[in-house]
Length: 140
Image: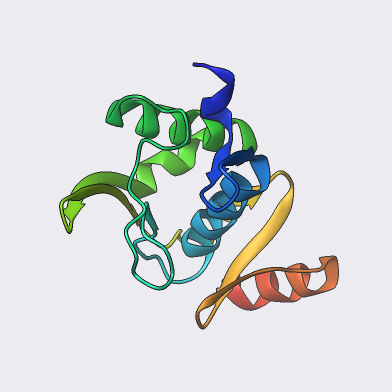
């Protein structure tokens, strides 16, 4: 996999930014930890389709391989069984929908050692105190 494949592309500046990819993974982990969901790669918040292929990944299977590899490294390999990848066509362009199941109460997903959860329509990182309280309420 080439260097461009390890980063997201900012479509406004046309530059690669690791923070864009990290933000996507934070959301993915948050969905696993709280409500499950279907994050979509290639669709902006305003529903504008920006499509796949602009961030250095040349084939659709490269997306699933890259995402799986990064989650194995940055979260945990066992969480793959709680997700499914589905390529869809929206307004003639390809996007990737990732179906995330909510983890069982005894499991928690961390990204790079940090805990993320969904709060209404936001992904938030919990402080240590908040993470302990969240975990106690989750399994208690």
